[in-house]
Length: 197
Image 1 (cartoon, rainbow, N blue to C red):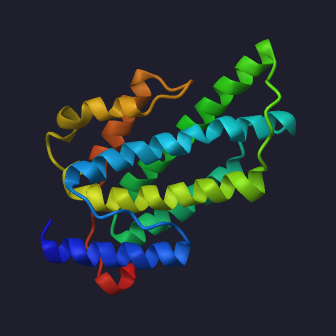
Image 2: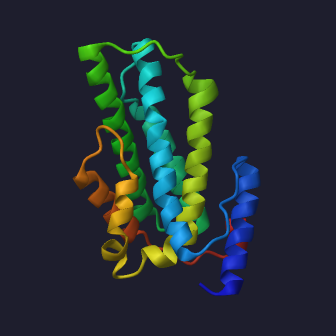
């Protein structure tokens, strides 16, 4: 990525972060950007224990198809605005939603067998969703910055060890492999810079 392109991308993401009230992705190397993609994906999945705890305490099912569709559509629209192909973005975000459900289901199944500890249950709407929205915005920003590295033919081979950053109960080796594949399948599409702002 040229210095000019990186500057424009960073400016666009800074403006998007202000609009989304998210912290902008840090400017870093390609290695830093790719590592941050995995760290943010892990951070987002880490919140799923608290989401599961809220759903357990409120006797709410894990799957909320209407909410998932809304989140998916909004994420794909934002990805398109940044110049990421909608089809490949939809595949990645659908996978992340499925992985989040798997983590929640794992915790719920465990608690049904052993009981849940008495930790404070964080509020889904006031605490958890805003945190997930912030992490999701940061993840999308850094994914955009990492696109040139994700598009490399040897991306999966070079970055396979980073998939181990994603380490939550309910996540299997196949999930990590699918995440790598979904990242490597992301495509950028030409979008005028003003449309991204």
